[in-house]
Image (cartoon, rainbow, N blue to C red; front, top):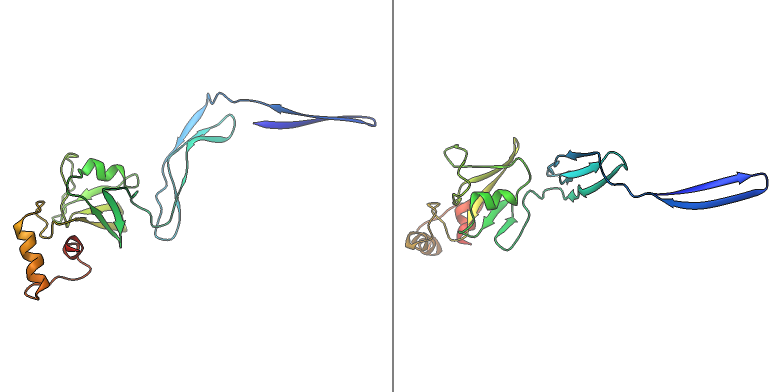
Length: 173
């Protein structure tokens, strides 16, 4: 960092600036602090004990931002909406640290190469879960097929219905 040094002697004063470049020899990793609905969080950061600065990371995560949006995954109305080709690994790489995926029967997904289906859940914390919506996978079987089209058609003419707050409704949207 930069420091200003001032030398005073009787009626004479000299000031000069010294720049010291830290080599960041002593560092510590500060873990991610996930956001909540009301408070901001912080990304993981590497902190230099010597100079007292973060040398990477430690950026603010806005309140309520549990998923980093991209072209394939979007947090929309408290649903994680995604394209069908996304794997568990890809989804979790965009979620806050410590998140995991749970099936509707309660089992935690361990195979990172699996593709989530509509109705699975991203568990952010003990108090925050976000339903997964795979666009087009209305019935939650993992395939976008004629059965999904049939459900959408039947719903459009009133023969079938589902709650507007359900993942299936969002998948058909």
